[in-house]
Length: 461
Ligand code: CA
Image (cartoon, rainbow, N blue to C red; front, side, top):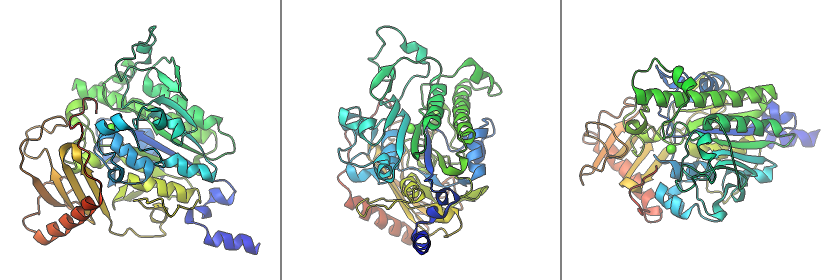
């Protein structure tokens, strides 16, 4: 008994949870949306799109009002989330580079860290971290993979049933299961939601990690008549289709959560929902309100995303956390939940959020950084202040695809807790603050490898 108590007292916080005292490690479920706008969930104030399932994650746990990803674009953001490190450290900075070279061989990802703790790991959906054999999900920490390795996909799976299938266009490949192509029918988001539920249901005693990487609501804008009918109150046709895709995503999240409940796993599963980057408003009609900027920006609209987490019985419900959190925090948080040691050489840039979420610790000011060479953009946030080199300021319509207007650098300072929309530039009135943040960025930038600027324009983002 003495040994047991000593071990318990020395154990990480999560080991004190009801789940672990029953001898069970918690499951970890990361649900990732693609190009979903900050303002397009109910919990972030959407007025025209209802997302009851996604909202339930925030209601059962915590809504992060300042949840960030590490890049305003798909592949580099996913590199950061899955490695727990700033992807800039290892040259995965823009989609086109990652499409061409994939992620570095030897770079450990989420599943590689959870395998030693006894976890079974699965990826359902979009990979986008390289298409070469050494980058395949089954070789990068995922025991099970169902989905597509490319950066996007059409939604009507039936269009791929022709023989031979039209595989030349990148969004038109058959889905695969662990390397074997497979014919599927129906609406892709529904198919992926069903696969996620199946993964959960077929697991037995082994704890699991599932990365549910939906491509919705990324373009192409495609939705079923049934989904469109549920958002017929929206008059703008592009916004209506986008909204229908979000509703389809919410249905899939609802199916996943219902499976957790049916299998009695709600108190044994840490659930996270977030988007991989902000919405490309011009391309999809996504709304990043009340933020300024879009996908491709280091303004808040590009990097601050819908972000929520639940773990029933461990994380108290109905919380809103306004201090900044990052997708970089998910891996150290998951490892703490699993009660596993973080290796000394892991070099994670994030932090375990559980002490903050369980009231064991208060939020401390922290520094978050971004560098996006595709448009020579960057930003740094320290405490409530952010210095940002912006891209779209002054243009009449915010766009993710317009060219940089001129060579002039707009480096601006904002106090985000008082100015979430980045509308009041303080760079002239607070030169000392500006200088301090500039120094913080410069020091980090100098520590990184040279910027990867290959392929500045990306056709498929
Ligand atoms: Ca994306």
